[in-house]
Amino acid sequence: MRGRPAADDGVMTNNVTTRKLRRSTDDKMLAGVCGGWARLLGVDAAIIRILLVAATIFGVGTPVLLYAACWILMPEDTEGE
Image (cartoon, rainbow, N blue to C red; front, side):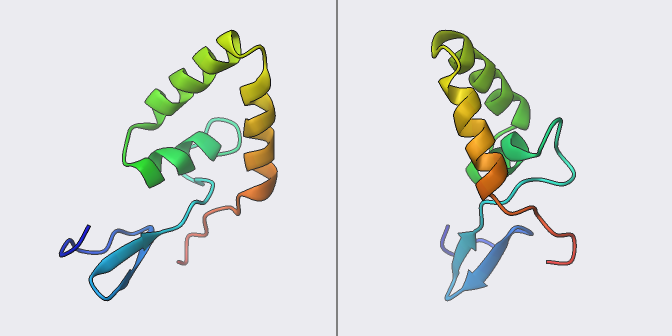
């Protein structure tokens, strides 16, 4: 990430962008967890949602617990930052 301009969701320090994991306020269906992870990873939120559903089906519900934990622990993205 060196030499790239800072993204809206990161802080530019010494030519290195530091991204923060936050729940999305504009790309959300339930709590914004998948939108936040998608922004951090640089992929479309639909891909994260599809992977979550598939993992829930094959993982017998464990990903739902991880989603709930992220919902509780991840701070919500603020518009002013």
